[in-house]
Length: 118
Image (cartoon, rainbow, N blue to C red; front, side, top):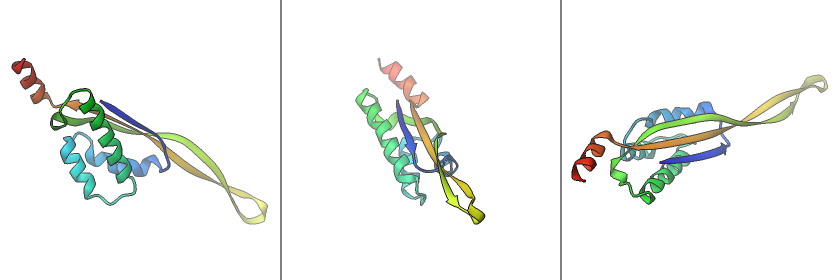
């Protein structure tokens, strides 16, 4: 199951600090980690993770059997602004954005149990 957020107005470098904390974890553990992390990107990533979980539940997969397979932060568009400097020149300010992609997968042990029960 996937969830994507495009053009989030924070630099990818800062968002990656949060995504690296939860990459590869079980969904419950990742949500718990996000609850106790104090970074600006946490509420957005938490909401995106909950959206991916909802997509999985809608597809008929139990949320207890999910883990974060991959979470990537790519660079989005860069808004270019100018700051006045000395002698009539200008310095460029880059306002960066991020694209966040979350992919969830079913834990391997649970796949085996599901096949045996069928």
